[in-house]
Length: 193
Image 1: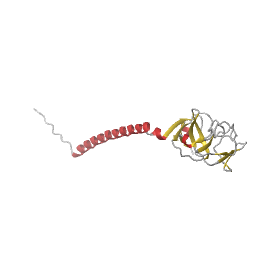
Image 2: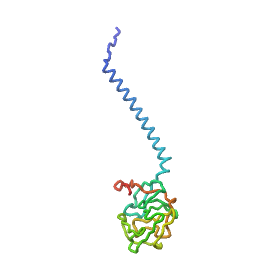
Image 3: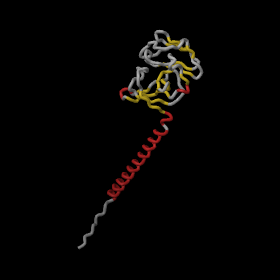
Image 4: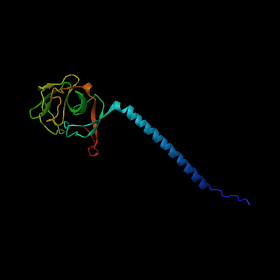
């Protein structure tokens, strides 16, 4: 004798199953959207970010205590800088980080005790770790020429910078970027101002 299955799901069971299938479909759709977004982010990072961003590892102590050896920094590529910015540039095959002290048209004097005057005003430099005069051969007052910047390290006793003819002033078109963020190590993460 043949037995018939007389089971008929009620409307609630049908709606529950349809809802489960819809959620599964949406989940797959979200995963596809995630994959596409991830692929676009990778492409953007690979092709676009290098045009605007630069990542550097800090070595040496010339920018202590603002930047320390072992810090990894994010630099925004620009040649529009202002006094106080930490800029990236190259000299004699090395990538250097120094702080902009004076710009085109300014006059700089560095005293024997390491005090710095720009246009006759003493700079208040809370960021320096060492107020030493350092080793330099610049003659003061030093006049900053057109499209030039006078830069100094924050660790004045050891930094080689615009006080020395080895570095001298830098042209604004030599700037590769400004340091904006310390992103590693974790305990040092902060915006650089």
